[in-house]
Image (cartoon, rainbow, N blue to C red; front, side, top):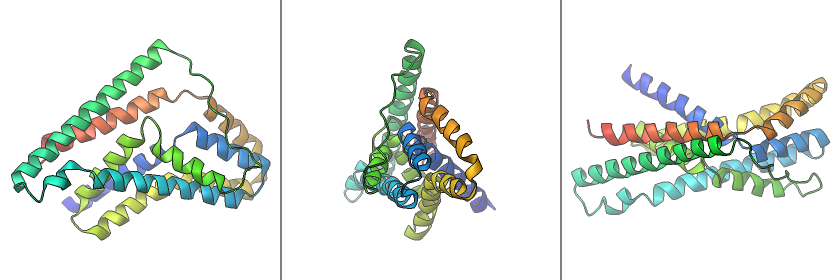
Length: 232
């Protein structure tokens, strides 16, 4: 029962992290543009979500590979490695919480954001959407804390590789599902095109800084929990 509860909480967290990583105005703009123009939608969508998944995986592997705990674990005792891991988590928590506070201050001092960059042009090769997805999953206010937290959550589920991969697959499904579902609904329900266009137009111009601050704060709290509860 304890394992079921632990997996339920972990998978729910991973789904939320996947949805949060995909919450990017540039992705919304590109999706709205490709759907509105109705040009090579399947190919463009496939390239974009492929770039999203690839970028997220690269960042996850990089964060796991360059974890200082892994570099010293072979030379340090288990207790020392645990202490270092806790220290890293506490440092990460401090950085993420400080970043959340900085974003809140930015939002309060500068209520209106500058206009976002225009999405990729419809005439661009479908493969260009891969680089859009790749960049959006690597560069941003919340990408590092999201992927760091994702790595910690998956690593905490099991020492075995297969369960970690399955858990990460849930994260990837949550990341790409909204875009694939919207494309599917668009093709099957043409009457909703105007509604989706209006919705995306609003999403593109929304100020997501409160969302960024919330994601950073949650990531900080999760890392703080890992740091304080590790070994107990």
